[in-house]
Image (cartoon, helix red, strand yellow):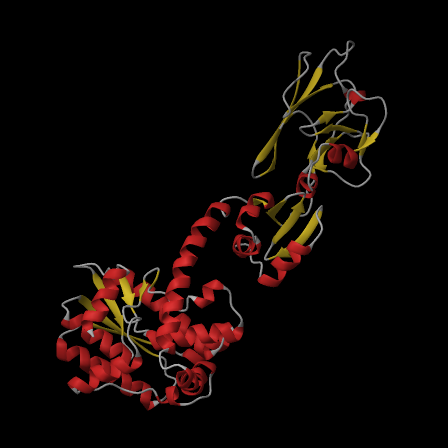
Length: 426
């Protein structure tokens, strides 16, 4: 069996010579086989055992067995005790999820403490097959069809290439003892029902069903890597040009993977794709999606509008990213969008810097009549997010003296009679 496992390790580059690895040791057949295989192959290993105190004396029996197994071979042994039920109640999660979180959080910390390159866990082919079938039952995309991966960050799975039957044969030939978790024999949870009831029926249809599912999962995994590379390029931006996705034939998968990072699920993605353009078409986890013409834009939900009062000349911090400098100076006309030059004699303090509000209007410089700011922004083809962020400067008379970065009001503009300029620099 080691020959088979060794090829699998090399194929996925799981272990490196002279690096230290933690072996997650429960005392069950799978983890004991993993420990012995790596130990006998000369790998640098230490063992880690979790006592979740869920099965009374049986939990303590497992710990004692693991400690003795390691002591006989002079393998360093680490243990951790958890009040799993209390953790589950405190964090409002299932017992299974609590045990998983406690286990993997401790493994990560243990790796840092002892300088280990990773944690080897004893998932085998049957575990992979069960996971794929569970994901199918629950509903899954491509990633769920990959099942369990050989590597997930620092978690390594060298036994995914062998079956439970091969592991049992491994023990039968050498007479090695291991412990049995009695809860694994009860068909009272979904995974155990798959293991004890569904898979035996599938093997009646095709004895090679496990090998076929594993091969399918590996093929899907390779395809997933290609897709991840493609999607990764799009994830670098918060804007997705829908026209670019036409070359892929179907865009739903890429849109889903792109939006998943912002907390959107599959149902929301389908609703977003079906929605009309021109407005906010979805929200999740503090983000909103705008469907604007031929593109999707994601932004954090806008914070409540803040008003900044500018009582006199000076430099004012508007937020963590911007300041407004206000000063009087000699007459000139700015051509820079971030600087407004106004007739100082016509602008009354205090000024207010705020976002555009419904009904705001001005007489844009170069025009004679008044115009709603909403129409001005539409004329410039600004999207909903841009309109929502747009700032104005209003003087004490309520006049919008500057649509920031875009226009000044004609009534306040520098003219032939201007003697002093009020300069606003954002």
